[in-house]
Image 1 (cartoon, rainbow, N blue to C red):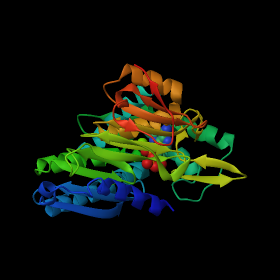
Image 2 (cartoon, helix red, strand yellow):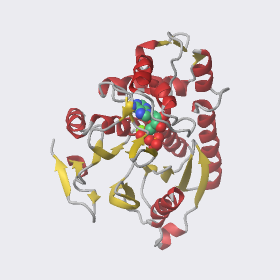
Image 3 (cartoon, rainbow, N blue to C red):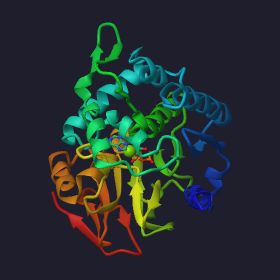
Image 4 (cartoon, protein in one colour):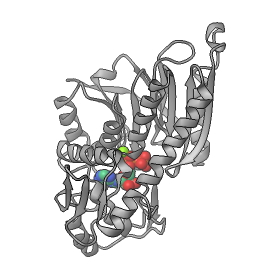
Length: 341
Ligand code: ADP
Ligand code: MG
């Protein structure tokens, strides 16, 4: 099922360029599908040396996957979680610093120290279980960024307490798609689109020389789309409770956790898409705004309308967009409500 959805999304992205004009069809292009970071990725680039550039892109994805995967005990994050100390690479140092900013900006809705809680719910092993409130209560004090001490001069990150673990899963894919855009541009590619498990980032234009059209999955019916956003040089990243969850005693438990209580976030949103030039920010904020709920998310956007835009779906099937998307978002299935600045 999940695969079918991804194939549809990939098709939609690629098919926006299906009716190639003569001029553009002569241009070199290449597309590649691969599996990394626990998800299916598709990369499409237009320009000279397209295949070689995709080789570089694939190597970059593998490098970051090895480095950031919590499941790789020898990688940087694996080592940190195992030993409580590691020398951070530039990439991981950047992710740590961005996490601090996101944590601050979202008033703790985004917190990469959530990993021990993810373990308690079985999301890290797929052996799902509902932990008791007492168990969560004992783990929750570990979810605290002040327990991670980073020394900029030496580059060493060290945990101050036993049991603390970190996970950049909430921003790693957005960071990776951002890195790919940089790599494409450094190598002369002006037009490209990548989808990392449905998280999309684009540069330039589609083969028709129009804005890229990115479909956003419908949380009510994840085989369909809630609408389309037309963008250039942006990341379009969605967090949804429908993406990863399990059911027990008729109740659904999803993988976006509220760091304040250690339980799946339940603030009335079922999907949040963030559109921003910055992939890392878009990814982190999609998780954070989901945890914050519509009212607080709206407040945060009003403080930073130039930094990002967002599409929200509530559990009562209402769809809201921030004003910046007024001209570039369309939906056939929802009545679109606009959040003014
Ligand atoms: P996905 O990675 O499935 O596309 P998200 O970007 O929303 O979805 O990230 C969810 C992942 O982020 C979880 O699998 C978990 O590793 C981590 N996570 C969950 N809750 C939080 C949180 N409140 N703050 C930071 N990271 C979180
Ligand atoms: Mg995210």
